[in-house]
Image (tube, rainbow, N blue to C red; front, side, top):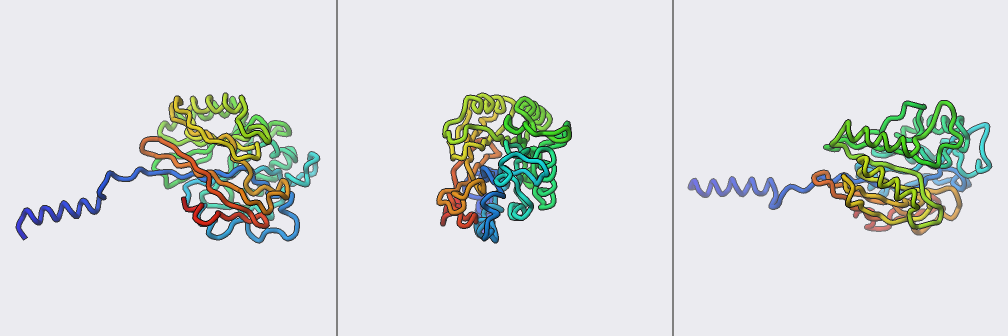
Length: 309
C-alpha cells in the first residue's frame, strides 16, 4: 500500500479508538434516598422477604454512591413514647447493605433510646456491614470516604440541629456550626475532593424549605460543599443550584420518605422516589432527576424504564 494510504489508515484507526468527539466527561452518580425506618409497620406479619426487587437492587448497585437516612434508634431499656415506631431490631438491616451504600445517622429519632439505643444502632449497622456517618464518639468525628474508584476523593458529612436531645456523655452528632467547620477543614485539606452533606432538617408536611435550611445551605456551600441533601418533611421537594457559591452547590430541599415503616401508608405506595444526582468531575456541573418507584409489602421497585435513566 502506498505510504499516504497507510498513513490515512493509521489515522483512521486512531480516530476510531479515540472516538469521533472529545472524551466524555467522567460523571459521579449519587442515588439519594430519604427517610428509612426499619421498624413500625415493617415488623407486622407478613414481614417482607426482601426490601428490593432484584433488578432494582442491581440498578442501585450501579451507582457510585447510595445514601439513605437511617431514622431508627436501636433497642434500649429506656425510651421515649414512640418506641413502637422508631425503634428497630436487626431483622431488616441486612437488606440495606450495599457495597456503594452509606447510612446517615443524624436525625431527630436516633436518640429515642437515648445513648443506649444509639450505641445499639451503631452495633446493628456494623454487624450488617453498613457504612454510616453521623453518630460518633465525642471528639472523634470523621468524614466518611465514599466511591473508592472515583478519580477524585469523595466524602460524606452528616449533621442536624434536630438530633441533640438524648445524646449522652459518650456519643453525639454534629450540630450545624460543627458541620460547617468540618466542611471548611476538609475543603482546605483536600481541595480536589467532592463533598456531600446530608442533613436532617425541614418542616414536616411543608414543601418549601425553611429559612434555617436556606441560611445553612448557603453557609455549607460557602464552606466548600458540592452537594447538600435535606430530609425530614416527608415530601419530595425541589432541587436548586446555588450558582453564586464557589462550587455551584446542588441543594435538594427534601428527599421525602423511602422505605418508611413509620406508618402503614407506605407499605403499598405508588410514589416512592430516589433522587439521582450527577456530578461532572471535569467541570463540576451538577444535575438531578427523580427516579420513580413504588412499594409492595414494603418491597421497593422502580417503574419500568425509570430506574435506567
